[in-house]
Image (cartoon, helix red, strand yellow):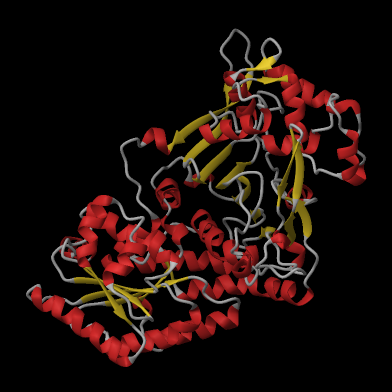
Length: 591
């Protein structure tokens, strides 16, 4: 059946109806995605696109503003296919239906296939779904709705939201989008696990020591604090995006890739996840950070400095959760999930640590194997192994078997997640969408914890902008059974006033008293699993340490750069002159 749909998608009439077409999502993602699909010839060149909004507008006016991110080729192909229509009254929906039927008639008839994208606030779902069902439901083809998160705030609100759309449409007509399921590396998780015999025998509690799913952003809320404050980091990132990643990492093998078979195994995994409690989390909120960079004071604002955020908000911008899966595959294995804003770097990855050899013949000092699945940025999959160092002696060193997407697939075009969602919905493929039963279980896991946080409003642990997390997060992870890697930023946050440690690091990597570019690369690689650092990493390091911008770092610059990673206090401001920064000591109360 799916093969027939793939063969016919370019021939049959197809209409995309974009509700909320004048919003940010449509401008940044939906119009560019449709333009890209046309450029790649993945949807019919005759596709019909209705851009809808609540106000009267001209099509040209909408496209001029909303089509700015569409490629030049995409604009040529897409813009002639777009018509703007108002969707406020019953008559508006009747006119919309007439326009679609006229398009199908001009195409010579055939199945009248319709995909409605709801880029709308959840409170508008019920009324809009009712109008679509009453006036715009296809009589000869399929009608499918793509629904954008948030899918409620807790179990009860989702139950109502599901009822609002479920009273008008069947489950196989509802496509709830989680764009993380459309990311290239996330799409690789099931093929990686179930098409390579090396992994599945090891993918269980007998061999896996821990799993850490980590999301970090190095930006603040950037004026979105008002929206973010209604949800917090757990609802915004963890209950949806990261939980979907956990499902794909933890689920059992489905009988096939058919929609229902995949959904069954996803649901089985979710049912095995224990409900979260307050003891299973540590919460943080980023605060302002001031530091001195070569006699210039720099200020990074805190969460409460965002004018759209209430002054007394205790909403967490960081959370670390310990999840437990009570099934035969994972019982006893800690699954750690962490997410935070305004941290020391941007990344999303899964780190699977394997148990050490119970009877090592090469000594007990060997590092544990780790499989790291980097979702973004710099997409990659790499495996940390122990290998013999070339030479006459048998000395083992940890090294990386590295598959970096930019190198392995140089000519490949991965496409945007929204391209996949729009295409897969037209094809009737629901594996990348979230079903009602999944969300019921997802909210069952998180709702008690979220209600307790909402009711008690515990004080989040403050962490300065650009730090690696709130105080105590490493101990929380360790107590949970997960060993965390130290980033180079975190090394300087922790040891910037420890002269001996800094000197040892500088001496290890410097040549003739300075760090050249190659030396900087090896230094960063020490904190990056031995991998080649990216250009962005190098620029970030040099921005912090290369004061005269000559692409080398002297010992004096190294000390000055290290000092940036400490909070800037009045005491320290008075203490610093032009002397070596280690001419004073910062007391624990200042750290």
